[in-house]
Amino acid sequence: MTSTLPESIAAVGEINDSIHIRRLELSDHERGFVALLSQLSACPDLTASEFATRFAELAAQGEDHVILVAEDTSAPERRILATGCLFVERKFLRGGGKVGHVEDVVVDAAARGSGLGLRIVRRLVEIARDAGCYKIILDCTPELRAYYAKCGFVEKGVQMAIYF
Ligand SMILES: CC(=O)SCCNC(=O)CCNC(=O)[C@H](O)C(C)(C)COP(=O)(O)OP(=O)(O)OC[C@H]1O[C@@H](n2cnc3c(N)ncnc32)[C@H](O)[C@@H]1OP(=O)(O)O
Image 1 (cartoon, protein in one colour):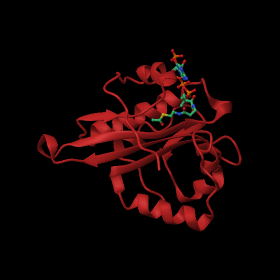
Image 2 (spheres, protein in one colour):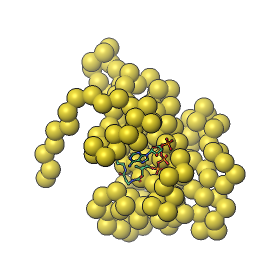
Image 3 (cartoon, protein in one colour):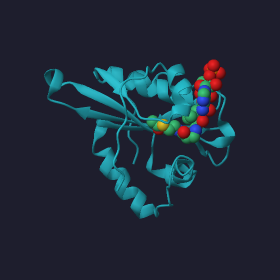
């Protein structure tokens, strides 16, 4: 099962000879996608069946839930090197406006510092703009202010949370 990229995004999918940014595919379970997420937060492995169930739920949200991954097509195992997610929230506000939320951005520790994180987030911003979102927002730690500023974000408001 593969979800296709919007045409405008697919057209700029290749960022160099071997790193390709595309939508998450079901087979990415075997390419280290879950292990990559565990570099961001607690993320125990999922069985293939558990992964497929969640993949189908998210795929059913179509363009309202976009997970991008970067893979190295030159490596035989085509491991996933980076990922980032865009969730589109549909509102009654602003004449039925839409807000983009950036979530779960992570670059493999061995691939950091080469611009991959910047490219993934910029691509998510582009998708949100093309989808008609009036803003795109995210939560991050203070240490990541400079990184997200490089991605074009400005600081706004205060994050509040209740963890269960
Ligand atoms: C909404 C969320 O998901 S928040 C969670 C973000 N994810 C994490 O914290 C997981 C662990 N960290 C990572 O995966 C990576 O370090 C990321 C995603 C934060 C950055 O990915 P990278 O590929 O290393 O970043 P990239 O190389 O594209 O850097 C882009 C620019 O931001 C800067 N930058 C990157 N990380 C940082 C940082 N932690 N602090 C300050 N500046 C940074 C870089 O120096 C670079 O600037 P330059 O263009 O002037 O050289």
